[in-house]
Length: 146
Image (cartoon, rainbow, N blue to C red; front, side, top):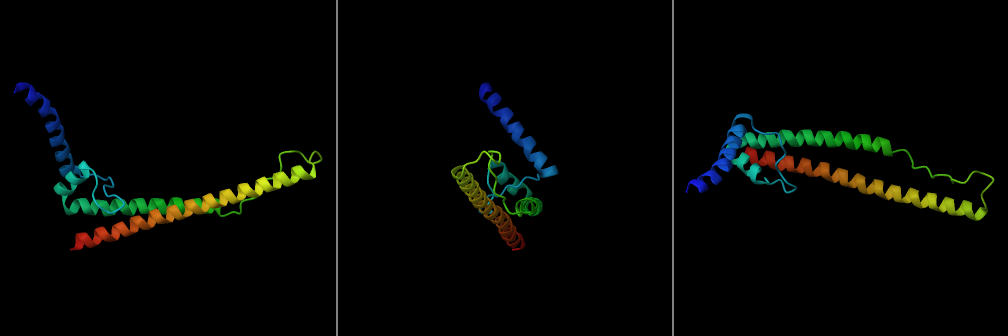
């Protein structure tokens, strides 16, 4: 019995400290998943303990995350809006044969197309992530207001 008490005492004490910390200070972590549902053991504990304060913190965290992602997206777009310039050959002029020029031109065009495809994929992923956060915020606001 004494050994069992020792084994359970420390985790119980740590959990009690965590609950006390959450009650006093709250947390500023985003604890909702892609479906706008609370995830994780600690997220569920915080929701139960804090109630509406938990959801208000989640809305604030979503706002901060959305603003940060939008800023990053704008900076990324500015950095990538310049047309991708095809790279000229590595071989100095005068040492190229017509076949080598064709090969380097085709490789440069293929590189440009690949970079453009990557840019489009990244662009759509960033827009989707921002939209997901905004939708999640709307769901949480609706839930809190009910």
